[in-house]
Length: 165
Image (tube, rainbow, N blue to C red; front, side, top):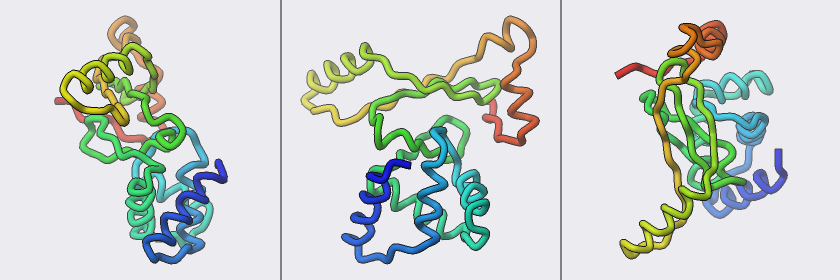
């Protein structure tokens, strides 16, 4: 984990008049231990592996603090569950392509989208600060081959699948 993230959160917590606790430190370490999206429940499981005394309530409160401190972004991937993006602190303008069949999420950046965002917001009298695009699609594996290794892996690991509309 980048030490700057911990420092930024520590400063933010002090400015809010809150205490820095071992549980919060554990949760922050768990949140930034992997470079992948996670749900609150997945973060709780990661944090419990580091410290079995970590409480679910503290995970939710710390998630809110990290979002408020602009260290994490809460994103909606269309699955009716909040998902958190730890890459937001270092890459504030990246986008997500979500497969509606297997739940696989691909993160991408595209300078064309950034240019479009800039043009549209300026034309309407705004200054762009950040962007986030979510594209829902079907992966070609399932459509072309009738099987999707991502779907099989998702089911085997017990990870959540998106709800079809």
